[in-house]
Image (cartoon, rainbow, N blue to C red; front, side, top):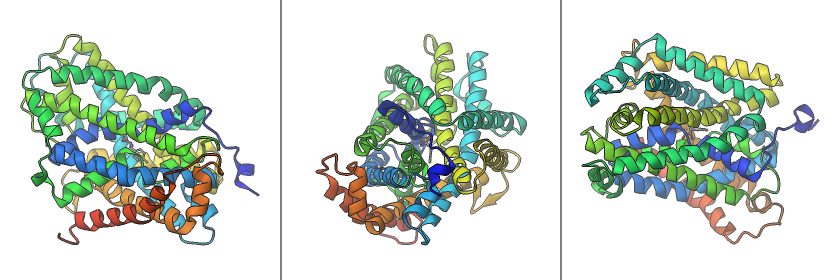
Length: 454
Ligand code: PFF
């Protein structure tokens, strides 16, 4: 019995729908919340250069590989490997991906929950007249609390589950097509406001003038982890989405469009945030609170800030939602197709398990903050393990799989739509997946973990 007898596959219905959904997965908290602060901690411009290099040399080939695997196999992250490499341990790559999905969504939903709180705060004009210190205190008091963050996190998980139950076409495709362009417009508006702040130029210099003396091994690993995280790579999200893409879609084009959109939005978020950070004398290495402290500070000083604040946090929520759906979908597609539960049951089961893990993430910023593993609170441990370990490792195995196990023949057939498209760049792609990407990931990995010193 083939898999399609078990579950009729939900599909994206249009080219724009595919891009909106995949870009919806890629563009999320990683771009707007995480990128500015990891870039800030990584020294700004130098981080950006390395990040963009990683996207081009590693991100693009990994993304094309993931789409190809999924579309060829027509299965979920684990099932795809079982299908293309039966009776081999390759399916373990998918297992690692599903594990990463659990870890990521557990802290991702916590942060997404914060955006709900900040939407409410925006409505009640809670930022008005407060200085940076007060906004800082407001944020830290909130996240270290017990019930409020948990409440919002739960609401967010319910929202995510509710859309995932409805399937892909009806949920993500419909929403993202409208909301992603809106998000871009909002960020552009914020960029203009931020750049024109007196003293903001230093922020742009920080982001665009690379000071390579700031680069450390940790920064390199951080940039690689961020590239994977931001592009939704290394855990089978895009294998799963690839399995929903029509056979006549030009995968390479989709990859370029999604990666460019994702990178541009991360840079725009940087442009919106760093000038303000410098204008208000905030430490660019501030950390996870950056967006929740800096932006309210800008909003309460700009004309119409009340409305911009509401709209911004709402769009941040939506960006988070279109990503969290894709993360949950990895787990749900696996449970539905391999364990044969109904979609509804699979979604409830996965959401409950992730929410339980999420409780610990959230509490680790408050009452559990003394509980540390390798010096990290649970929240940071989940993030580090998933983003900097599991995703790059997953990406490594994915390119090795396409480059060496599957090989050039099947890869070319899939990417060229069985010969319908001319692929002048195919040798370059094979070179990247066979040599450059595996070598670069391995090197950054062991160097970043401190296993070797250059
Ligand atoms: N790419 C998302 C973001 O930047 O917010 C997060 C993410 C989604 C990571 C899906 C990994 C993933 F598989």
